[in-house]
Image 1 (tube, rainbow, N blue to C red):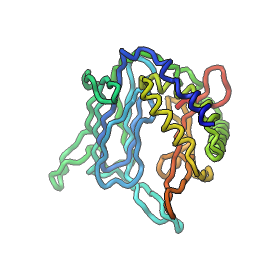
Image 2: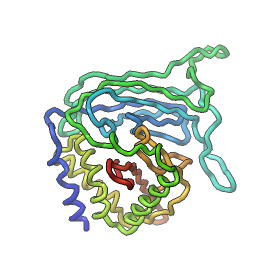
Image 3: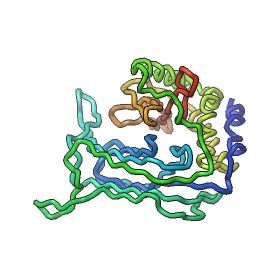
Length: 309
């Protein structure tokens, strides 16, 4: 079973074009005191929904959301932090009413080239450098987020990207805003239940085949070489074929639309994660969980949802 899945995904690098011209864009994100979601071309590349006592920072590759050269859109959605509270006898995450004055939002997008070891070989400069405006608090003289006190803030802009590839992606997919929301929800549930069953039964071959088109685009966007492809395939087999995985029921979800109306997924309304998850045992009374994010679209000339990322 694993051999067929390895055969399906192990040669993605052979279809990668213009490896010697590879360009990588990465977002350097530093956000604290709030919950957030970062989107490139309305595709989510980073998010955090939970308690926030400090700041979070890191580097996120974003080529996966860049389908072709040209003007790209970026957006940062800011929400109040969530607190752990007991509701109806169960502990859950509850959002505060407003975004705190101490929240901070910074993002830089840099154009680079990675070498075969994954280190930066060449820097081409920053294409976005954003810092949310601050203002003086008249009461204490300290800096505060200028838009603090609101339940939601959105920052956005554009940048030029030059990549040596063109991906089909979701650019010409069906505009889901023209469809009946109930139909979209039912199609998503059908797809999620299918993946739920595959994961439960460790049907790696079916999962690999269903995700092949999506992973082919990811391989091009990230310029896989054989080493990268081997690393990806090994991680894919381990994660999607997790031994001893006990999938949990599909529940507590809502439909989320991305990709300017052309991508749909299910998210958990508590933490904006995926409702597709399972536990596996790591020791005596010790467990870990895997969560599986999936994004779907309806390709041109088709009627049903298919996975795109």
